[in-house]
Image 1: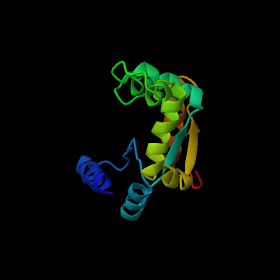
Image 2: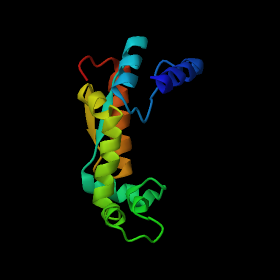
Image 3: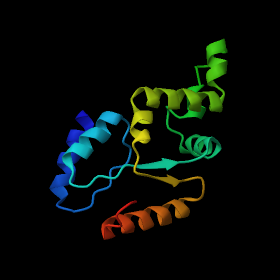
Image 4: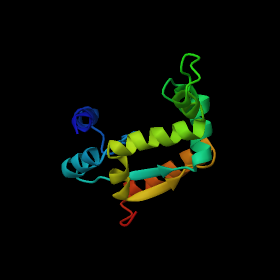
Length: 139
């Protein structure tokens, strides 16, 4: 919730009516935003495991699946298991679920499928934000 508090403070400083927060990771954050905002929509962005894995491998951050298995040349059983990107993705998702991500997503107001291209995702997000701005009632 601490990160949500700081995020809300920064969002209010913008003076905008619509603020998008990307990267919510816990039920506590979602509950905090819901309790503080006049309107709050939690949007789950879903993608197939294969699509997520490919994107994470390309991104190349140290905690991404491809890099997770790099254990300084050590060929231990643990190192070999982690060198499997699918296993590393599963471990990463378990870690995030431990932070309460699954609980947050259970309360999502709507879902967007992100298995396509970046342009497809942008189009879907713009459409959904337009519906929210219009006050489309049930989103």
